[in-house]
Length: 306
Figure 1 (cartoon, helix red, strand yellow):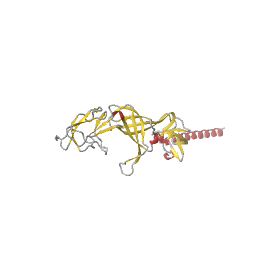
Figure 2 (cartoon, one colour):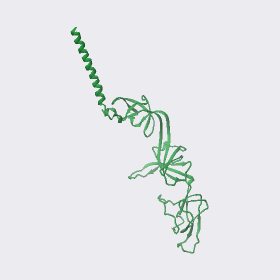
Figure 3 (cartoon, helix red, strand yellow):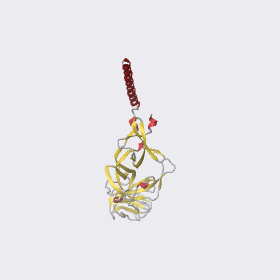
Figure 4 (cartoon, one colour):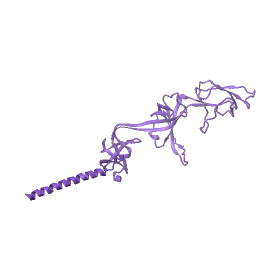
């Protein structure tokens, strides 16, 4: 009888020791998990995924007319100044020919607007604005521009799109336009021109520049607040999907032609799963495969964290 009780006691003690050891192991395993593990995990989600292209450009007028004098001479009177609107046939300035402004050999003649528009300074062939037009200014020849008439009804945005992104765009694609100098306002537009030939964009650091394509955006309803030369940001929504399984793009790993994710099991233990990526934005990717919303995926290989 005593032998039996002794055996039972030893058995019970061994069971208690085994339970304590197992509990200690679980506690050790739990404590061995680094406290910053959440830094390496991202959650799988379900929702809408949009792919946007955003580029900076410049506001231009697609229809401008430079105004030239009949010869060399002087501007003797300004009837319309830079920044004012003119109507077709309206007098802009009076011009007097000759070598001297006080000469009586020539009489002043009017220079009139050939179209409606906004008066601005002329632009030199190097892209800089010419000097301000003023009374008494000497004009050296008939080929010297004295003012420019800008048609404000044909405002557009010029973009330079990289050769990587150019085939993501198409004529007629709707876009949203914002201006730094007009905060809080959004304007709609459409892609009107995609240049068929690339240009070389010069590099600030020398060497060979990148290849870009000129893209012109028509503005649906130009505003009187807009000014030629303003900086614009154009956003094109190229693709969108609703209610898809998606995750941050940094959880995707590539091995050859195959894509994988590491799904957390417990702590730093993970399952390596093959997945099939779909639509990608700048930050997220659509995922098809054995993952579901709520799964936690590693952004680095778990083995490297142990």
